[in-house]
Structure formats: structure tokens, C-alpha cells
Image (tube, rainbow over all chains, first blue to last red; front, top):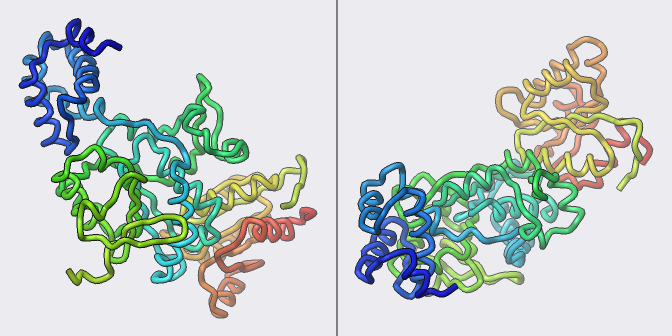
Length: 288
Length: 132
């Protein structure tokens, strides 16, 4: 689509307005957008202005700052990227069952609780993948009380996650046998994940860069935080890393996306190399 | 894994407070042709066995509100048709005392977690009289 054409037909926003808007979004979410992402910004702003009946950017921005009708939440929902699929980056899932859980459970009694957090969980593909992978690949799955929590800043995505209905593209990495056993066909060619699986995962809203938001999330043994830090600037990444550190129990692990490196973000974590993946660990003792 | 064909439908009740464990057992048993229902603790399990017919109950030990031992003792004190229901107890506890307590409470067989899906199906087949 023609970027200039779109801007001239639809929105009339000055570069200064874009900057104000981006600053607002950054303060609220840590997501860092610049003029270079103008097309991305314009498209979402246009959608929200139409939805709210705003006649100008100024009118919309006033409404946004007043948080009329929870517009901040609607805006955040429109700016988050929710494109993912089951068994994405499965080397990390393999690492979980072939290495990480052995270490984690070596310090627990059988019957103890293993806490796993998928954040951001988007529309649920990742936490459901973790549960499926555990049932299919971890021989000790019945020996521990496994708690899987999926959190996201996008409440619309969380609602979709709880419903658990997916198209073919999201299931492309799953075998027909798995799809047959854990999904049922619903309207419009969708596949709804098993009710038991839906009930086994708790979905909650959380903002990675908000320390207050993150405070209730504690004592996780393993966190999957993949492909979100790339949307943050350096300061927000550091804040997110500090928050995630506090959410892990000492000795707990965190998996990042393939293009992300905790070493470049924060010195708090230790690199842990396993045959299937490189992950990061909160040291056992805070020895500085 | 055993293939038991379609009829007769053998009904198994899985009682465990962990949703993932219930799902894991259910998945293995349904794949083998069993009809599986679930309960999250002893209280819910008692309601189920009193209202629906089952051929076997698989029960965990440590559960909130009503544990597996209490459930089995209640089950064995119920009306004759319900009291006769075979019970497979599966627990992370592996001590001799735990096994003895399970037997005393009324368990027909005791397995220590982790239980592989093939092992589970094998024991369920034996306890329900289904050909392996």
C-alpha cells in the first residue's frame, strides 16, 4: 500500500504529533516506535479513530489521555503483535524436557509444584504448547503439580487464548495425531483446544515494564519471554529484565526469543548452555 | 499400546487435583479406547461414582478437601454395587507404609508416579479385564 497516499487520504498527523503519541505509548507500555514505523502507527491510529468516532488526531489524543471508555487498553491491544503458532522454536521446549526440568525438579520432592510462566502469551499458542509438549515428552509429567500461567498486556489476546480456537496456520507444526487428540473442529474451520487444557492454564493480564503489575508474579521455575523485548528500547528492556528477575525463584531459568540476548540487556542473569538451547538463569545466591 | 476396538465401552474415572495429570492419563486411556471421566478431588469423585457406573477408578493420594485414602474408605463403605468398584491408586509416595495404608483403605493396586502411558494402559486393562 502507498504509504504517502494512505497518510494523505486518512490521517493528518504532524511528525510532532507522532512523537507525542509515541512517547505516550512508550510510557504506558515500553514499546518503542519511531517515525520510521509510520505506516504501522497510522494504520492502528486510523482504526482506533474510526472506532471512537474521533474527527482529528487532537480529538483522539485528548480522549486517549482521559482514558475514555478504556481507550488506552484498546489502543494497546491494537499495537501488540499476536502472530504466533504452536511448537514455535521447539528447541527450547526440547531443552525444557531434556535438561531444565531435571535440574528444577532435582530440588523438589515428588508431588511438588513446578511453576512455568509464558509472558507475553499472546493468543495462547505458547502456554498450550508447553502443556502439550510436557504431556507428550516429559516422562515425569504426572509426578509434579505443574502450574502454567499465561500473561499478556493485550486483553483481547487473553480472551482469545481462553477460548483457544485456532486456524490451520497456528497448528502447522503439530502432527495430525496431536491435532486429532487435543483439538475439535468448530465453526469456520477453526480448531478448539481441549477443554481440559484450557482449564489447566490460568490467563492473566500483566505489563512487563510495570513493577507493580509484576509484583504478584513470584517463584517461577521457568519463564518463556520470547520475541517481546525486541519491541522495547534499552531502558524498557532493562526494566523488564529486572522485573523478570524478581519473578523467578533463585536458580530459575528464562528462555528468550532467538534474536534476543539477555547478556546485552542486564548483568543479573547467568548464561546457561544446554545441548538444545542457550537459556538464562537467575543465580542461586544473590552474590552480586 | 492395546487396541480394544469399539464395544464394550469400559468406563474409567480419573481422580487427581492436577489438571495436567488428569489430561495426561485421560489422553493415554482414550487413545486405548476407554471412556474416561474426571474428578478433581475425593468429594467430586464420590458424587461421580454414586451417580454414574464405572468399571475402574484411578485415584491420587494427596488432594485438597478429600484425599485419596478418605475417598477409598468412603467408597468401600458405600452401597454394594459402588463399594465393589476396583480402584487403582497412583501416588508420588513410594514408602512401604504408604502402600500398606492404600491397601488398608481399599486400593486394589498401587503404582508410584511417574507412570508411563503404556504402563497405565496395561494396568487399567488388567484391572478391568480388557484383553491387552
